[in-house]
Image 1 (cartoon, rainbow, N blue to C red):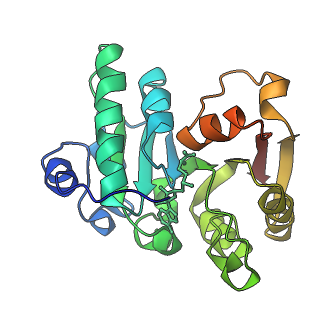
Image 2 (image 1 turned 45 degrees about the horizontal axis):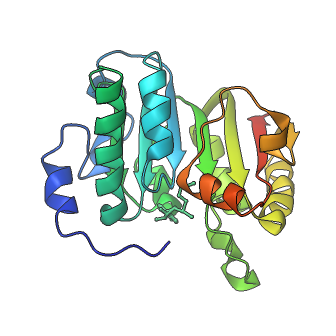
Image 3 (image 1 turned 180 degrees about the vertical axis):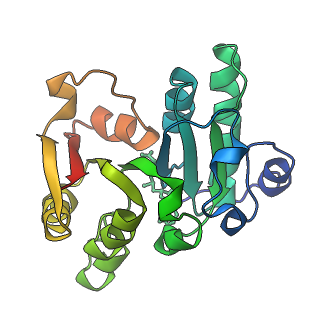
Length: 218
Ligand SMILES: C[S@@+](CC[C@H](N)C(=O)[O-])C[C@H]1O[C@@H](n2cnc3c(N)ncnc32)[C@H](O)[C@@H]1O
């Protein structure tokens, strides 16, 4: 994703009560940062955060972590969260955001954190073979997520990209996940409670089918 630098983003994030500047400090200790101890779900590559803002403000009974690599993007996530929670008249007490490279997710999350669900929405498809290991659904990554997910933990994955979707089904199965839901055209399926991400909206407007799956630890 190409995004212009935003000099305001880092200072604004550091002044914000739900941004963690050095996430490894909280490895194995995320729950105390939230108002209540409750199930933990995470979003990987949250982008501008419209998804996590809507999801978190709709579900006060879940705690959320949203992770992205780029401060400029996370600055927008922060603002989107503030606006969604303000609209619902809710305190921001069930979401934390952070800049981190998901390839090193094991440095910020431990099995004790008990992640129950991971969302991966429209991750970069890395079409060239030699870069495919960087895909957030690559088996190499799935092995890391498996160690973090609790029993019956699940991954919700959406993409516009047919090759990434097909390859990801193989990655999930190779890593020992069971694909329990597979929807090749999510918007036609009228799946209940779907929240559109920024990229989802853009691709759907171009007439591209949105592909969705849920993979569960077997
Ligand atoms: C194509 S965008 C999708 C954004 C959003 N999920 C959506 O659906 O609109 C991919 C996002 O993943 C982030 N990303 C890519 N690789 C990452 C990594 N290794 N660690 C953290 N974030 C990453 C990018 O910065 C970008 O914001």
